[in-house]
Structures are given as C-alpha cells and as structure tokens.
Length: 294
Image 1 (spheres, rainbow, N blue to C red):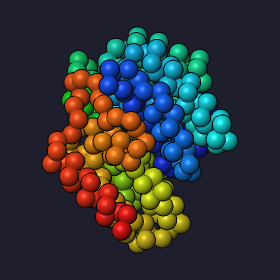
Image 2 (cartoon, one colour):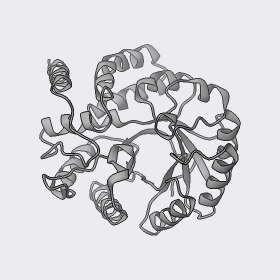
Image 3 (tube, one colour):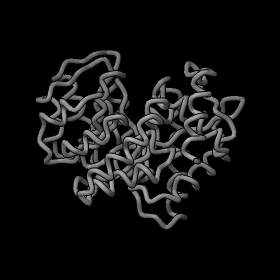
C-alpha cells in the first residue's frame, strides 16, 4: 500500500487505447505499458481523466488494472498503481474503492464530487465515507472539471483525515498549495505549473504530459531535488511548449494523437463525446516533435 512517506516523484496517468470499433485495444495497451515502464517513474494512475474514466465500464477498469499490475511485475519495478474511484455518488465511490482494494490497488484517487455541486460539508462527508474503506486515499481537486472550488480549510480538513495520504492539486495556480500545510504530500496535477509547485513544496506530479519525453520530466524532478534549480528550470522551460500544446485541446485527445504518431498506439481513437484533435493542432504538435529530435 502507498503511504504519505513514499508518495512522491513522477506519476504517469495512463491512457486507454481504443480500436476502430471503440473497444479497448489491448495490444496497444500492452505496447504502451512496455514503453512507459522503460522509464524510472515512481508510479502509475489507472482510470483517471487521461484514461477517459467517464466512458469506461468498471469491468474494463478492473481488466486494465490487472494488466497494468502484470506489466509492473514483469518489469521488476516495484512501483505503486493508483486507481481512480471517485464519482459524484458517494456510495458508488465507496463500492469502487472497495473493489480497487480487492484487486490490489496501492491507493485510490478520489475526485471532488462533480456536477451535483455539494456544499463544502457535503464534500467532507463524502471523503469521510470513502476513507472508511481502508484503502489509502489521494484527494483530487480539479475545479475546472468539477465546477467546485474547495476552500483551503476544506482541503486541509480532508488532508487531516486518517486514511488520506496526499493531494493531487489541479487548481491551475499556486494559491492552494501556498495556503495549506505540507504535512502530507501534495503533487502537481496541472502540468504547466509543475516547476512552480515544486518551488512551493510539491512532492512531485501526476502529469499527463509525462507520457511524452518521460525522461525529461524525471530529470526536472531529479535536478530540483538535488538543488540544481537553474538546470531544472531550463529543462522544464524546454518542455513548456509541448505541455501547452498537449492541453490546447481537451486531454487526452492531443496526447493520444502523439502516442499514435509515435507508433505506440495503433489509433488515436477516443470514445464520444471526446473527439480527435484538429488538423491545425496536429501540425503544431508535429513541428514540436520534430524540434525535439534535432
């Protein structure tokens, strides 16, 4: 099980490849994991936003977790697998967290309930129920997708709960991390702010962009932790144009396009309502990828 003492570094949220008939493309997923696990990442997140969680059945999630665990074991890496189990229904989140624990998740990622816009107290009650399951919980604050801004007091109250081991902060700025205690790990979830959040005390990042040039994101983290901050900033600055393009249109559409372009995925297919990227963004990404090879 993951705990607050070892929740740090670069965690990569996995994509879910689909074939032309919208079924999970298991061959591509196997190939993708083999490529990703060649890097010394600190962990994986299955069934997050990057994995198109809203369009996956829970049976598909269970299969994805099992295959991911198999690849991690074969790679001889001892890295944790975090599973996204948060929904806007507390009982469903509890049930999924129970199942995640049963299939060997090292922790679960629980997003702030979205759409139904609960009060701050409602959000706290939601997390209290989920932590009762006993699987380590990582809270996930992402106001751009939930339409709720949690107060720093609410976030701190969640972090103070026994069973919550850390926070994925995707608030698009550094205000929240500046206002709460760092007694538990806070990982950046808004890729463009990764370096700025490291400066404010973040313990790492859960970064969709780190699917591409994973080694460079690892280098940013390594250099920063070795107090080579100027070098870390230079490497991060080189990644900024890529990060910006990967989020120019909704994640994971640009990311899947790049992975397909690299031959790691057979298709850049997404399940509706997500759609492939525009031709213009494809041109921009292609130019960026060529720049990295020169």
